[in-house]
Image (cartoon, rainbow, N blue to C red; front, side, top):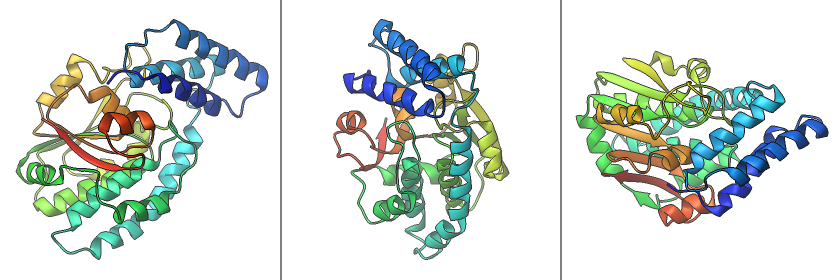
Length: 288
């Protein structure tokens, strides 16, 4: 997916929010450096790569290794507190509807995103998603793959949201009545916005899923991990029977690949236009 002009404004807002607790002189230095980068960069690249670069600048100039650390911790805490309630919601569903409900819960969790917005109502969003049809609904194909596949590749998005992903994967395992031979759960190699990193997956218990391993994609730091658009990421995809990509950033970076189920909420006009849906639409889209 190519960068849109609206993305430029969004990156500047992200830099403003990430530096909100710093003094004005340091913020000014960071924002000027971000503006210079935005002016000089190649605007033909993808939005996710731009975001990585912007937040590398924020970390480098501010000296903060993870400006969103407390936000992520709180997102994990709030989502874990909701875990019993969300499982109870599943238990009230009929057996044939449970997996679909768990998929919708995973999409609802995608609202925990401090990239396009800094304010959201998590419980209200869960209720909203549960009572609305999906704008793009390739769930039946996803369900068939869940039953027939042995190796699951799951590109995670944000801290907090990964609690909802855990519930979805747990429901996959219950529905299959057998474990996957391998679950490869992909997170960022280091901090960028509120994206999940390895510490988050252990914090919310995803490491307790059977036959799970963790892979990393780059947060923009040189030599950190392969990028989403790399040959190595392509190899990850080719080595698995079923591939799920969560969220807008992964959609931006992986939309040129094939055999992926994209699951997300369209939270900004750029993504909504790309998918030809309304803002706040829930989507399960297969690209074969």
